[in-house]
Image (cartoon, rainbow, N blue to C red):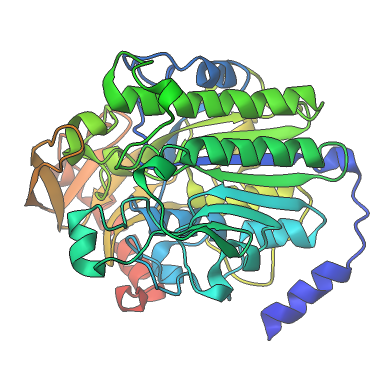
Length: 456
């Protein structure tokens, strides 16, 4: 009731902020893209000219993280600004699950309540109950899958769990395709791009807009349109990445041609690291491990932000930022007050802009895997402490879409000096017991605030 009252007050509040102070926002969130899957973050064997251009015209953030390296948990944290154990959304939720409780406001709701046009195209995966779908969570327009593209009858794991349950494609609250086929999946990236560019052209010059493009790729199974098949010379994964790069270019073109480019913040990143056990159908990271783990290979994603009005082009920022900070940061840039609901993220725009003396408003960041709190990082990015925990280690990668072999590995209590050891190879716990104790206590305090039992 309190949340509804606050939202109602937003809807009737006068919008007296000048249009120039209210930038458009385009947030592209990929699925399982590795840190090194695009130039200039890595050197993949295929070209990505549009992402390179975006980086040249914007800022590369080399120390961007998500609090949990799994689909639903990462997406819920991005949109709500809250840790997974705060919202109860951990791991990857399956079909038929209610998802993120509407009591947790989303950035889309905040921006819409303050005059923004809003749209989402692509993957949702934070709930498919009527009250948790995109059109009920602040999006004027929506089209895409409500769950992962592998949660269908063609996947033997999900077929065993779901039987012949369909994978519907939704559009504005109704099912457009009752059960997506492999041929439908070929068009997911193209459909999302077409929806995004159409929305930009329809809204440019009218009122500010928030566009959330959450591509289903390069999550397995990999699909792309026929015109990209064989284009990369680097197999199916390279073809899929080239189509995503094309998507970036099409959106940049729409912004430029409508005159919206200068007043638009364009962010590109991924929900987590690569699904390494799929071998040549997975991306690459220079860091340890992969998706589904609390190591840097799972939680560190490449981030590019272009905002001509305030960011110096062609620069690099190595200050730690977490995805929970994007909601309050973007809301502040949009002059949209946050709701009367505690969130964990902070407005870090001075730090992201590279202001002299800018400090991170956090003291620590907390990293989990499913219901377990695994690690604590200092907000300066120097130290990362791991509680003892199990993790999934790849023994033999798969090939051409087949899943490889994994084993459960165990990590002892560890302390890594990330600045000098970003691959988390040297445990310096014994050398710095006082730092370990401080981070150990921070972990205990976090668990008291958000007990794992609260996670669903």
